[in-house]
Image 1 (cartoon, rainbow, N blue to C red):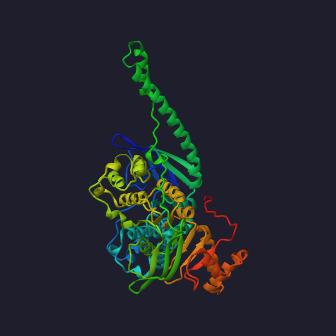
Image 2: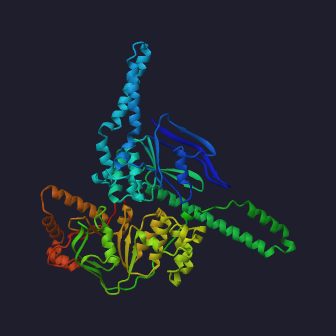
Image 3: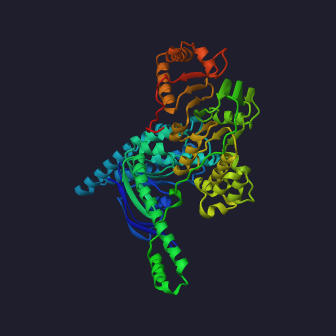
Length: 602
């Protein structure tokens, strides 16, 4: 059985001990998450396990011949060929085995071999054959299409040059290569960063079938909960193991952190008392001995340190300005990109206070519809009107490019911060991963992820009652996502959002709008779990040959029977769409159903 074992690993950067006596074991079937605050050394530890960095002290044991593959967060190096050629490169180790098998076959033709030598060569020949067969090499085209399609590529992409791909799609291709190679151990550093919901769901299924060991870093709580069985936490240089799911780790760790916070507060009180005594009596001769004693006590205290990422941070939006009951009204909306029709004849009314998730595959028109509602895209057919008193706050990935490069992070945030929130600006910056000296960084040197986080915070600081958020959870760690989620749940205005974080959607959305290019939009009056259940039921109905419109009306009538309202009357009462035809299919939760989530929260 292949394994990698790190024992008592120690690594220092200058005077700082980044990793202290860390011990970790990965083997076949391992499903482990590596977590900890930003800057704790997670990526460094992964690189040590991958053999890319040498520790200062400690031992590394790896099974002979074990194949360990590491996926970095960014900056992967690909070849200059096509996507298909790059994917086929995952089988290079198998082709090397076939070359060796041919050599063994020629050696076996030597009549002068002793019986023992012949037996050894025959065994090697057979073992290579089994390894090649198990690798899927002889059906590699099928496997390549399965993995690439699962990660969002289409069959028409195979002949595209890798240089044409954006950074995100290059990361997807790099992940595909590792999955196709089927190594003994995979070290995946934030593999979900550039994956949409469909690709993440597919990867969950892939990992469930994968026989090797996995060590994951991810900021997607749901993804971790369904894929891992143990958690390694790197905290203040020490690595601790927690068996069980990620949620189980969080619960147990929260109790431990409460004790740490309490001990820290007691220590701070003790330090303050001692320092106060020293200040009061430093120059009083009769107290000189006691003062010196207190100074010695201070020097002996080992300070309890709480990393910035573990500090509790709360954030509230500025009060949402009051608006009319209807915040957005859309009629006969259509949008095309050349011959591609992404939105067709959409009618929709959105009521104040709703929190609606836009879901659907890439290219379905989610971002397009958001740009139209935000007033950024005016090139469409039909009408889109905002309700009375509606103020829009819009976040998109390119929001980061509109900031002044001459300001620091703190100055940029303060430029839009309401006066009553200015004293709390550092805490809010900390919630979005700008801590310590980071707030003094000039905008010009920020990474793309840092710019996106700052742009999101700026948008949230601006008083608005309709938030349009296109993937706001990208580049946020779990702590920051929780801060954002709590703030959005308490927000009294309307929220329209796209996110690839399933747990975030489950916790926030009370309605789901499903979009798919070329198909009728579907509006689900329930949370994400309700959407998944109803969608599954609908897909099964398709299998029975029941038409979409026919099934929709029958379902709506059955669910709303106690109200004695027709499907059209109920639709009109809810204020979604017009009464002269179905603009989008409607699905409602039965009265009395609980708004539960898959993770048992919400």
